[in-house]
Length: 273
Image (cartoon, rainbow, N blue to C red; front, side):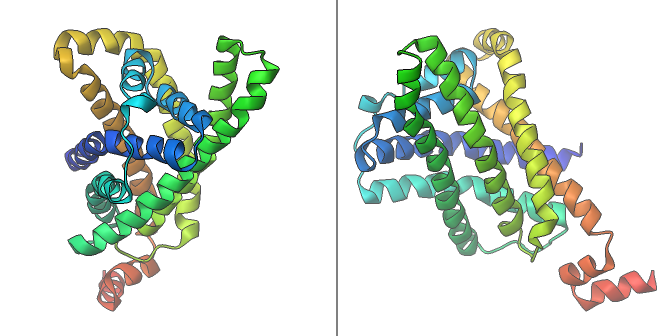
């Protein structure tokens, strides 16, 4: 609830807005040109509809048709992924603040960690998409190609696959991104709860989408879909930061945690107090 948290969340949301389209372009290009799976491309559109309800999801899907995404060479993919990993720079600063770490990584080290995370998280996202795409064939046969039933079952399969993938990605971010040593067990539980909370945020989006679509169209006109991405990314970032703050608050009550964070001087000052 502090102002500082909102500043960090807004910085993360702005980075999401900048990296959102490049990341999806890379994902579609990989599925189409490397995996040669049209079902996986369809699964990406299912995922977009799952994250963004209403007119925003329809607009994004309409402008990310497979034929509209150019064939990307390896250098282009790496360049776009480098753009996409910008989300982890403000996120590291925010997580360091939550854990009470005063020294951030250098820009180069942050980019190396971020690039590793974007590859791992991208691979996890690709895995959930591939699982959804793999199920497309037999689901289509079972439903006899009925579009409404097919869409419902595919969305359910994607949700089942996406929730554990999101939890694993959150765990890696909570564990590896702060500039301090963190025991994996410290962040395992909160990763589950935050992953479930983010899933709940999707249903809130589904509930509010019709009202927000009209509101943003009236207030922001041609920028309404960018604002939609920004607002929901901002709320999601606040949830992620809240989980980090909750874990770090309990951790810093432990004198041993202070010793890890500040060294012997921190433990000594705690004893004197």
